[in-house]
Image 1 (cartoon, rainbow, N blue to C red):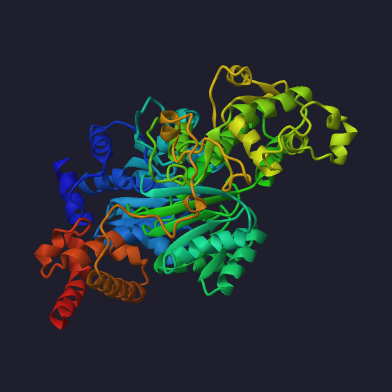
Image 2: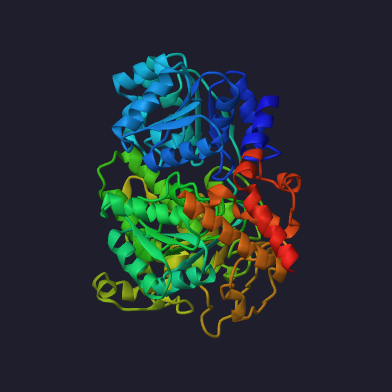
Amino acid sequence: MIEAKAALERVFGFTEFRPGQREVLEATFSGRDILAVMPTGSGKSLLYQLPAIVRKGLTIVVSPLIALMRDQAQQLQRYGVAAAALNSSNSGPDNSAIESGLRQGRYRLVYVAPERLVRPDTIALLREAGANVLAIDEAHCVSQWGHDFRPEYLDLAQMARAIGDLQIIAVTATADAPTRAEIVRKLFSSEPQIFVRSFDRPNIHLAMARKANVARQIEAMVQRHRGQSGIIYCSSRKGVETLSQTLSATGIPALPYHAGLDAAIRSAHQDEFLRHDGVVIVATIAFGMGIDKANVRFVCHADLPQSIEAYYQEIGRAGRDGLPANALTLFSNGDIALRERQIFEGEASQERKRLERRKLHGLIALCETPRCRRQTLLAAFGEASQPCGNCDICEGKWPLFNGVQAAQKVMSAIHRTSGRFFSGHLANLLVGNATEAIKRHGHDLLPTFGVGKEFKPGEWKSIFYQLQAADLIVQDPEDRDRWTFTEAGRAVLAGKAELTLRGEIALPSGRTANVRRTLQDMEAARDEDLAIPRSAFEPEAAHKSNAPPLTATQNSLLAALKAKRLEIAKAQKLAAFVIFHDSVLIDMAIKRPRTREELLLLHGVGPAKIERYGAAFLALIVSRDEGS
């Protein structure tokens, strides 16, 4: 551990371990097999890179993406670490040179794709090279219950045994309890030591909104982050093309990325995004796994994500440098219905479908929740938390009201229609909209017809999904087309339990309710009416950081430092953040170091970085000081 701490500072420029790293490293050095579930940005790669640097032997790193392997190997090489990536993107002579270097024991780490690892010649080569550790990145890919299953990961345990007695270090940011159990079963011959850190990413501001004009909603977010990098996810290739063209027409450097594009174009767009600030990628889920860009300032979902796990991993690509970032998700009832239909019509087993529906309901709960978004998100991963103060719910962007009566009306409508109808039909029934379907079933004659005119149909749909998310109404496990009530739902129906619901952005005209900025306020003054101005529900220009703002002089220096970083990055064909993270440049702008010793005191600056880049940045700071 002493050597690891020294290497942490000497090679990577960090003076302290991040939360959770020390415990995992101690177990690794004791020889234990490891499964580490840690949030994106917590430094998972160091869990196998540091042991490889300070111990003898060769560490094999398996990753699902060739581009990620290439980037990580190149970055380690710039740090002075003997690393290589053995894959099909290399030329024949390059791979031959790497193989020769492995036989001569020149490398500490070698990155290998799982498809290559199964080859007999690769197994023999790595055995001859003295491999003693197998590190598996994105380990959730081995689980068929996870959101990103990769069948080639299923052979990794067998390959480890074929190579020799390898210590296994498996890391991932996304694995709930069922996924963790399957990772253990598929990768380890004996029980590993399992570490599960908090899933919380407190620097990411969470917000969700119903679709209105998607292009304008997304453009508003991008404009607030003009000049910063971001990712926008769409559910279809057509959506990617349309939105990227719309944003480009407004002068935003927006690049499309999806599996239908030529591989060379995808690679060029990814490199442009990685190497330059201010580039926005509009993509399907084909983009993102392992993207190592620390200063992504926002992630938008133009459509409902595939699952709550996918949502967590995708927003986790923002703010990896620890600075404030934003996540905005747009959704509609059509998105939810489409996802339900995809699950129902899929060819998966009934057990798999039940799991997919459970995960979808977790995502619906996050969209429709009246309580802190982060609390709801973390609860889906089995983690309890307090209200975060950094989401649209906590900030009072949505009105909350006593929802008992509204819930009773919805459940009454469900009961009187035998539980056979979904949100759209029930909404029309409650507002008194005599559609053809309402008349055909005689529902315009029911006592509940028209009893809900205080809400619009869209609001009743939202309330319906909130009841579903709160587990008050459920689909009958024996009859998917029939809705029934849970015990908690029956308690609300009988008036024996309280319920808080979330309204839409604007309350219906002329209506008042027990609206509160937070659930705590509502509980403290439940019987008061409080009018909140509409301005309280308008989106803010940007999430406010708790850090004090930079002065004009500091901002000017920061801009010059970023320009210098970009100049060096272009010359060396690197991603800008590989040179220094934004947080390091901000620290430079505030503390204005003038010597190598002062520069070395900054977090994230080590001797290797100073040797390569220190002189250029110090010269800039000194010249600016002398010029002023």
